[in-house]
Length: 140
Image (tube, rainbow, N blue to C red):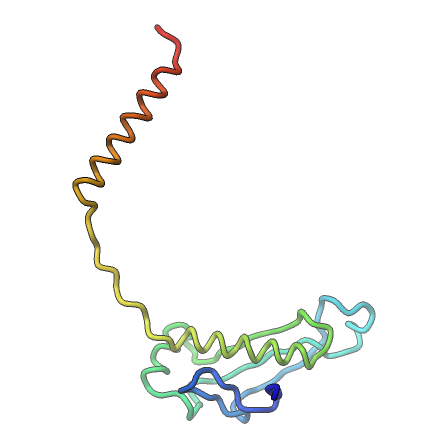
């Protein structure tokens, strides 16, 4: 069964945003549609206020606030001709934005040094290239 634009937004298996927390705005948008673009409200703006949400745990909220300091996530969709398709696009964009914002950060990279063999290979390759270019030059 296809997901309806009026349903709760499933971000991940642990996070679902209730439909009543989503705020929709519609307006006339640019883009494809010919003359109908001037008469239909096909541009969609979807907003979610994470601070007022009851669906996000404190750790997820803290991570989201790092990316969105005011706690409000807004996405827009204008690519499609129909409002319904733009609503679906906006829902998937919002889910992806929230998913990225609350994701566990990757572990910090431990700095490493190149091995002695790697350094020697690099220097040997530089010497080889230098000799090759020197052979191309005209003799003095």
